[in-house]
Length: 272
Image (cartoon, rainbow, N blue to C red):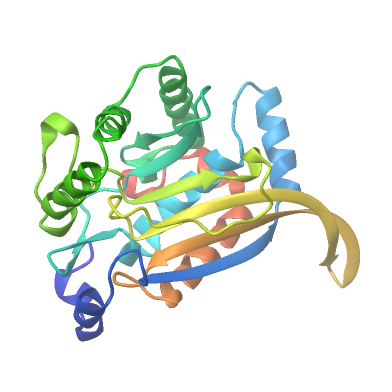
C-alpha cells in the first residue's frame, strides 16, 4: 500500500487547496490502441462460452494496474489530503432499458480472473436491467423528486458531508468511496467514436476511463501500412490527486498487458 507521506507532497497539498473538483482540476488524455488481435481473442473466447467484451478486458487491466504499477491512482481526496484506498473497486457504467445510466460496483477487481469478472458483471447487469434498484439509483430518484432550488442545496450538503469531510451515511449508500477506485464507461457501444469523461463531483475517484469506438483504419505494422482495428481510449484525471505522468504509466501498462492478454485468465501473483 502506498504511504500517505509519499502521496501528500507539497504540490499535492497545494493542488488540493487551489483546485476545485471537477471545475478546473482535470487532466485529459487519450491514446489509440490496435485491438485487432484482442477482438480475435474475444471472438474465440465467446465461442468457448466466455461472454466478454472490450469493457471486461480493460476493466480488469486497469484494476491490476492500480495494484501493480500505479497505486498513486487508487486514492481519494478527503479534507484536503490524498488518502490511499484499502482495496481496488471498479464502477462499470451500464445502460438500462429506459436509457438511464447506472453502474455495477466490482469489489477487489484486481484479484479477479477474466471469467470471474465476466460472471460478476453479467449478474450485476442482469439485476440492474430487471429493475433491482441499487442505493445509487434510489438516491437519484430521491434527489430528483425534490423541487429546485432545494435539490441543489441538499446535494451540496450531502457532498460536503461525504466527499469533503469524509463521513458515511450507510442508510443512503453514501460515502467518500461510493464509486470505488475508478469509473469505466464504453461510449463506443452507444455510437460515439470518442469523448472525454466528466469527473462526477460526488464520485471522488481519481480518474474516469472512456472506451470509444473501434474503426478499421490504416496502421503501420513492421514498417508496412495495413488495415487494423483501432480503439480510441480517453481519460480524465483529478489533478488534485495525480499528474499526467500517472496517466502515462497507466496507458503504458495497458499496452503491455494487451501483448500478453492470456494472463488475465489467471490469478495475479499477489493472490498466491
